[in-house]
Image 1 (tube, rainbow, N blue to C red):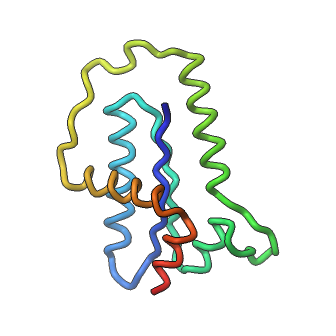
Image 2: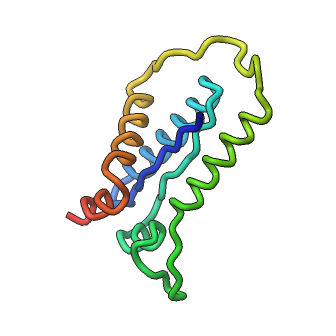
Length: 129
């Protein structure tokens, strides 16, 4: 099993962007360490809506190319799942996974689940309003 946390954070005019990016990064790292399940970081961190659309494959970049990071994340998830199955890392965790302990952990999981549920294009359009 592999978990892919996909989402998009668009920078605004406040420091809030940096705090959220840090919380998301730490939360995903914590999931990797606590569960032994590969958890991939598939969160776009961008300055503008156009950058988000370009990185999601919804708009051409300045060089005229279309590049979708979601495809790379999916390939990475498959590779990680196959690698873990091949290695069969028994005893990877020395202790049972700890329960979610902070509001930050719950927010990160909620945001990632919401992103996967709604789909990239719909989320990106929502940020424009």
